[in-house]
Image 1 (cartoon, one colour):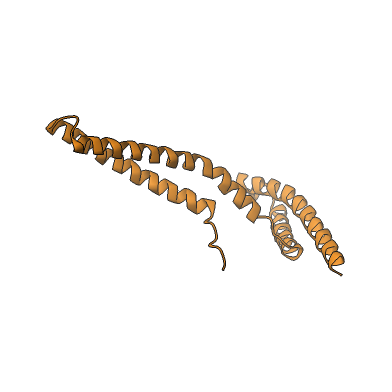
Image 2: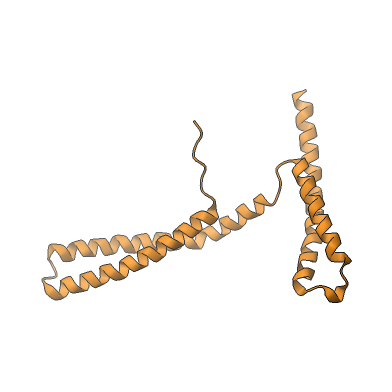
Length: 151
């Protein structure tokens, strides 16, 4: 039996943000209900106590969701970063080729025709190509050593 894959952090973050908005609306409605109950009857009424309980639960849920919204962006960035590194030497070589082609296209443009974003991407690609080349080398060595161990 295959376990159900865990949703991506980006999906969990989006869901937590939606839930947080929903809980905020519920809090406003529950606070208004409590106000109306307190205006209409005794503070010790069953309805007032129940609304206090509901409000406390909603506030705790809101705090948990707010923490989740604060914590998940780091995990989103980590997952995105890990996804950028191909798991096999062949895929890494293919990605390196794509990066080098893009680097060549950017370098071939006259400097005055490049935007600031192009220059930023160029700097990133220069660094990224070196890192990806090392990643390819690592994966090739790893795959070669894994085949030798199996044989």
